Amino acid sequence: MLDTPSEHSHGTTTRDDGGGHSGRSTSAHSAQSLHASAAPASEERKRFPIAFPFIHFMAMAPLDAWARLLFAPRAWVPPRYWPRLILSLAISLLGTLLTLPERLVLAPILFVCARTSRRVVPSRGGNRGAVVVLGYFRSGTTHLHYLLTCDKRFNTPRWSEALVPQGFIFSWNFLRVFLVAFLSTRRPQDDMAFGPEWPAEDDFAMCNWATVSSLPGRVILPRMHEHYKRFHDLDSLTPREHARWRTYQWAFLWKLSIVSGGRRLLLKTPCHTARVRDLLQLFGSSKETPGRVKFIHLTRTPGPVVRSNVSMMDRMSMYHLQDTVPEAEFKRRIIEEYDATERKFLSQQSEIPPGDVATMRYEDLIADPMGELKRVYRELGLEWTAQYEVKLLEYLDSVREYRSASDKLKGKDASSKGGEAEAAPKELEWMIPAFGHDRPAIPKAPLPVVGLSSEEQSRRRRIAFWSSGVTAILAGAIWLGLAVAVNNRNDWGVWVVGIATGYAAMRTAKVGSIGLGVWASLVTLLVWLAVAFAATRLIYYRTNIGPTAWEMWDATQKEIRSGATMPWAIFGILTAYRFASRKHGGLPGR
Image (cartoon, rainbow, N blue to C red; front, side):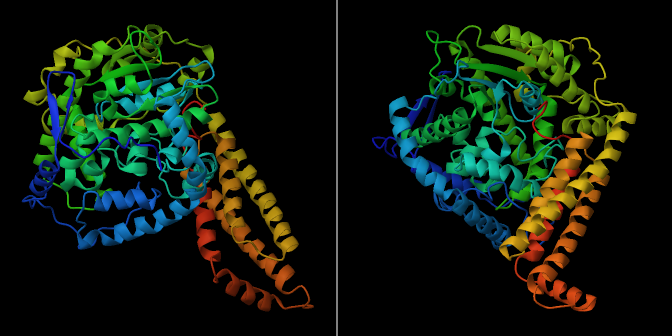
């Protein structure tokens, strides 16, 4: 649907990576690599005969994206993964139908804008371009991303947008609420806060819209890693593949710029560390036209990064549609890619205009986040505001007790190895002096306690129990009135009750809890039963004088077991629980 230059063909192509090396891609080479990577794994672990059908992160991707994933090139999905695939395709059908009207309307608009702009991201409202967080996977980039999101002058993609990139204003806003019931409040790989409206990686949008991403080879089809890894740094792509990536990356950022309200875009994708030159071209930035895209490069000692990536393999296997590779092979891939990624960044760093790049060490960010962020803002020429500082302190206080996944692993290793420090693989030792990790971290700066006191938090939660109950009753009354007015119970009303109840509880308490979530779901359940009983009497027994209580209850039971009544009830109850049990209400600092 987008304008991909037709003059490019599937040929043998070489693209200079900026460091004196070149990448070559041919169809024969790809096929050979795919067969090589599909060799049986000798270290296969014990497993169940059927892979549990978890809801996939590509579940809301359009069917055309799934077709490309499965057939271009052809992917073999073993029978044990078919239930997982079937569930994903069924949900994908719903996502395809939901977003189809917007896709049809936007297709000609994107086509024209792509040609007129030459696929350069537009600058709007005085704030030009974007800030991009760079750094390899598991280097702390998500933490930095969340800290920067506390600045309301940035607009960052949310998961409701990145997981359904083919949509736009209507579907994105609808899914921000709809997906609450289905998305966990914690990321599977590291337990960081997560949800439909939380900051997302734009590379997921590239995966779910057009599979122009390395993610399929990383966490979906691990036996096809050789094919998809080319999208990590873009060097070995054919001209047509590269144009396809550029088109869809531009289109997603074009959409974000439309809804940003003049704010600067904030992006975070680890693969962007190896795409600096492409991003400069995408935003039209150069030494002559600086400031359109600014970079913050975050690094961490390589030992914990490698270990955390290997650990992540297990936790992300819920998304696999093929058997995983042995741990030793996965570790080899990580080391090779990590090394190439950081070398690629260093080779292209000189192309970034002066004042448009800042570097940071993870250990310094943890020791003094306020000081490091103020330094980065100063180096990039970004204005530091008192409002941002307040929101930043509030968020930092809310995650004071959080420990990263790699820190937890480090703690386990330290106890089992007598406190021995985690060594970097020899191939990555060069990074330690290159990025300054041979120096100790800066002194730790204590942060003030700015969050709610325990007494105030308890008081707000007590109020939240009452406010959510009152909200549920009011929402139920409105639902019942509408049902009587249109002579239809409108089973979807329980979902609206669940949204209102859970949201009221979370907003009143500021910080949700499991107990509050259970209460909100219980109240939603009771309101659903009450409305179902009353609606049965007022609608179906309107002309029947004096039905007995038993007749009413028997009729109500039959009604709630019919059609989509029960699924809607489960949906509403789960939505109420998700909202009320959240530790954070929405975007960090918002």
